[in-house]
Length: 376
Image (cartoon, rainbow, N blue to C red; front, top):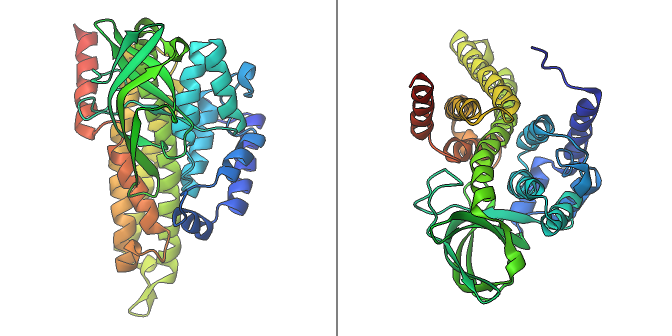
């Protein structure tokens, strides 16, 4: 199978790499994380102007008409630079879902995201939902006059601090889970904002009898639930690519450090045991790359094949993140967990990726369940 990129895809990678090298050095990132906002809105707009935000989105909403491979390319480079701006949450998930809905309002919201004019995020996580976007939701939407009344709670909504619009999953009676577009300024929404371990921003949201207009309903259960099920795997594919970028940086920094750090008059990279450890790290990255490619190329397959590829990728990438992160820190010694070197920050992001969108145990169980369904 040919895994080479097209000329346009390589240009996308090269231009994004060049932009991030100039605009997203590690010292610049550290300064932004210490600021009140925790991100750079001007950089978000620049990514929109460069066409990065719209690279994988349809042309009708201002995108370039790309797809999953373009998302993979962008996510890998964002991971390599440890970008905190919410490309996954706002572009891949929210704009991606809106683009699939294909309504006038959904397209307008997606267009604003693709241009960098606004940020939106998917509010789906609840303590009982675990990792499934389409799992049972305790947040409910009931009809109220000509509109809707929203009641419930969402936990750890990434990028809610920066968003102007929330795409909220909520259950409509016995019909199932629907999607609602909610303005963050709507009365009745209470948000508790906080930083995450890896430098992002999140919020716990409470919806107390929030009144919404009729047009807030973006997708009814019959449309929303299949989309949410698919986009759970889309999220895993995108984050797998990000993890590859994170792990490449961890590996490269560790190799450079092993070439410089001396013990007993020799660089530690000359010790055979260290060389063996670096080879093991490299092999883990290569397995993660293969899993990332497979799930990316399986997103348009049937539910079973896509699910198998997604769970395989999640398990492979999670185990690689743990192995490479821990070994990078150990080979750096105590300095690996300080703020002085980037490796500590990359290790934190790798650790978060390991647990997002489902644990290893959950995806092993899902993989086994899907295999059994084929044998039945």
